[in-house]
Length: 441
Ligand SMILES: *Cc1c(COP(=O)(O)O)cnc(C)c1O
Image 1 (tube, rainbow, N blue to C red):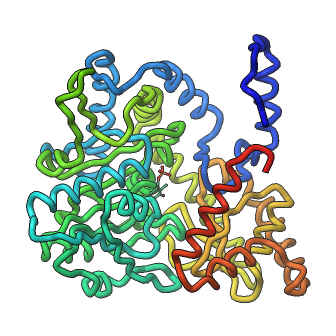
Image 2 (image 1 turned 90 degrees about the vertical axis):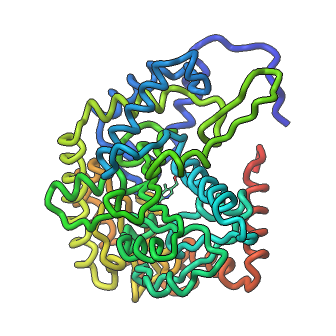
């Protein structure tokens, strides 16, 4: 057992220990990872840290005590409304991340349905399989059933399949721009049409795309409409802590108007501690993500973000042609943004990921189909050649291995997918978490 320390140690030793632990982690600063930390280089990072630290201790729970945070949150939302095609009626809030933005949107849709469609007693939410699991989590927390629409191997959901999944209990449709696993933009316009015909709440999850697609479009890449410019879109989420390059804790949720947003809010007026009212799930929130977001949008501006998106896209094109030139490997589907996945018809792709890891490249394993995830950031432009060289070598090594010698996550996915009852595979994953979050394991 580790004891709570009796005496404090007031010297640099602790910071040295922290840095020593950090040195064991994945090397994101040298663009060795393809998820989790959005890296636009040192200059942007140092500015973001300064802007973050300016309000690191302030608490945006009370806009009366810290009016500066209220002002900055409203201004960030206003700038994002402008970016994502909103108008004078559009409103929104900052949240601590994509998960909270989606939780807020699903809660709003649920409470909207409770008030406006009281005949619905078994609320359901329709979404493609490729949509983000934070939506499943929100539905689970909020007591809503999910109806998952299958996505084929290219992960493009068919609008007719969406239509066929609706019933009298459907309260909400969600689609992604783009989806996280393969970077594929769902047919937003068509789905918005289906939602409008049936008077159903339609949320666009642009958590990862909201701060890159508008800039790619302006840089001349083909990007279909995905945002509030499409009339059937009732709400949209975008994470500033992804391609907005803020440190973690920053996202936005926008609604067509106040009448939709009001269902997101919570208020309790009887508390002895005062009237308690919050916009989203979190209570106390650091001001850091708000000041960092506000600062970064002003620091980079449309042109700065466009330059970064263009650089990331150049890396994407080089990486994709490099990958497609390696026999047996291919880019999955037809991604149009800065996210894609590597698949293989010939080799165990998980073994390739495993061997890349031993060379210091961290690629997350994905399933359905088996693939390796690539979220590309501007800093990846520096590693294209080395990465492709290693990937080529690793692929030819894996080609020479026998099934038993491969390792990687293949066995894990085999176990999970061989369990017929999803409750059982869910229990396995939860058991894994229970075991992992213990000292000494
Ligand atoms: C990242 C992501 C989310 C969840 O966001 P968090 O910030 O991790 O909570 C939701 N949807 C999509 C498409 C995402 O990429």
